[in-house]
Length: 420
Image 1 (tube, rainbow, N blue to C red):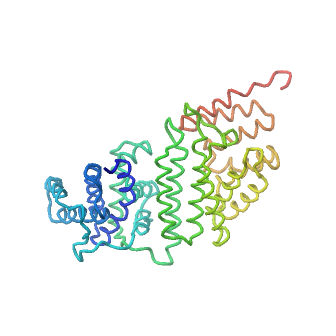
Image 2: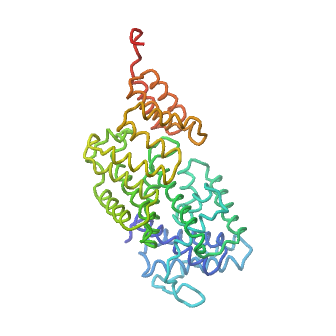
Image 3: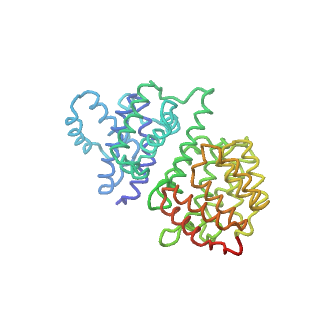
């Protein structure tokens, strides 16, 4: 018997391929997505009990196609749901899928589907939600839980996204060559955001969501398989693997955050580190340099250090200098300041982040105040450091980060009057 977990993993991998096959043939993204979700539900119910069919992808396409064909012929929602009973008549050895030619599509439309879900007509939030739903195979409830919004709210967001796709009359094809690089950057950014939300959740009681990081890595692997020579795709996958290698060492048994310098590095995943390092080494040698490759190179330098003291901070600073020139943004500057503090001292780092105080993109972010507190503590300005950590704690909605910052503030003893 096939285990439920194996079925779940298989269905998530097949979901975008099945949806892509339907959208390519029928159009009607919204209706196709509903039909695929019902086919996936039927498989999740039947396969654990009866075993997977000989050709799981073909079975799903057949079931979803029959469901969609009936839906397009009927105006009755009740009739559409009742007709799901027809699923039981699909033989598990079926290989015919496309009613037009009786053959299963041989190509994988995952990349085309990703481009569609990241269409410029959609907001960033909608791109995230639609990618996780249509390409990731997550349910609306799972996506809502990940982003801490009510399921009805997320359902409305996904529905509006699908309506926007319909209104834009977006064809189910790869963008023309002159648009492809820009659209690919959007796809990679969406996958990057999904990974980051899983690695350090923006709100709630848990520091990380392993399901989201795993989903981001799985989807990025698919893009890398489809575009094996693209250096930025390889760089993003390497960055995710090298970063996710730390996961087991990032929290204590009670869920409390452990900063990088204090982590037990024997808990870091050596296999992920090796795979990520090999990917970024090959990309740097063979592809045009890009921001994801530089971030992965920085992560690789961190992972090479057996202890925090062994970290090659001058090399990291040099990479951040280059990254800031390639992709100037305040978060890069903030991260670069950490390397500046290690190489040139905390006062130099404080001067770097002082330039961010007038930047509205980051001047209310808790990480700016957390970094300020760290540099002030390094410089011996204890009272100012304690206040910076407290401000940072008030600004974050992540409970583990909040507790960590409050703990940092509490551990700093006040300056005695005769020392002030």
